[in-house]
Length: 145
Image (cartoon, rainbow, N blue to C red; front, side, top):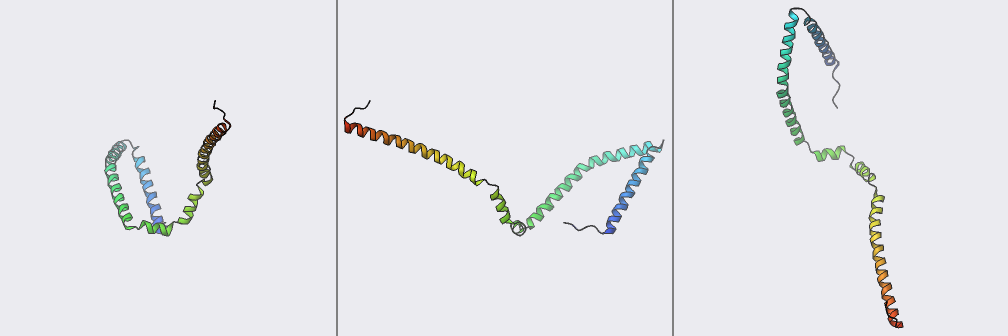
């Protein structure tokens, strides 16, 4: 985090803001004068329009410079080392694991496996029952219906 500004810089910024505020108040008051006011108002409107035409290209240049600056800074950084030094990876991993409902995952997976196994066991039991019944019927000489 950046250090606080020295008191002299803060004082100078406050004085500049007060001066600008005073100039704006005087200028707006002068715009209300009968003859001079109209000229001042037209001048301000013209400068405002010129500023609006300039602001977009200037903003585009500033954004392009900022993007290049950020890219250069990122190129110079070893992000892996930065993460190793600044991030508690164990705490992060613990937080991720705590967010996973393992019981629900295990329950859902075992429910489907259990249902399949029970279906297979029932089918095999029915086949075995039919096989035994057929063997007993043949042994006792009964015919199948």
